[in-house]
Length: 148
Figure 1 (cartoon, rainbow, N blue to C red):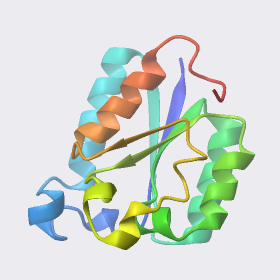
Figure 2 (figure 1 turned 45 degrees about the vertical axis):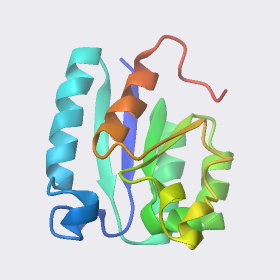
Figure 3 (figure 1 turned 90 degrees about the vertical axis):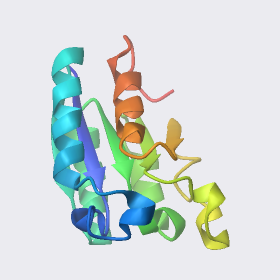
């Protein structure tokens, strides 16, 4: 069974409370529960991780490269600022899909730049919690365990 680590960055622990007009009312727990159900139907194993700290996210990405078949990463604001997270994604031998609840390209100018997009095998953005599900569907396809 393929195992995927779902990594969430800063402020995603307060989803449902934080700017619900932009991010919706679903909590991270709701999203994780729906992903767990989908993973069960797809025959995938999931583990979830969230941190508001950049270095801890880097360590989680390293762990994904050692212990998992891939990762789904919502680095949140670090998407636009962190070379360390980009370098961690580039350093691991497993595919990482960058996800976002909103479409950063349709938001503030500074959000249009992602340091992660060029390091990830793909990007899913703008579909709310479905962004995670679409990324998980990619991992369910045969052969999706090595970097493209």
